[in-house]
Image (cartoon, rainbow, N blue to C red; front, top):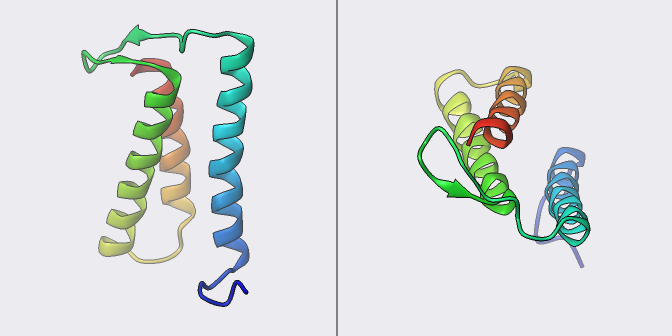
Length: 92
């Protein structure tokens, strides 16, 4: 049934991580409604969901650039992505 895609452990962990982040933001939104809008250093007014989207988009670009210029191993872009996610939720 799931043979149309190469379901490896890293692929499964990626999807579990994304859906867990969305689930966590849903729980936080239910507990603290309003999206916690704020104006960050880029001059954008963003909510939690916007910051998650910016984080995921930036992470994809970090990994694609790393794969294009360096290749493997992927531990360094993982660290850069975690740093980007922290920066996005604190400052953007």
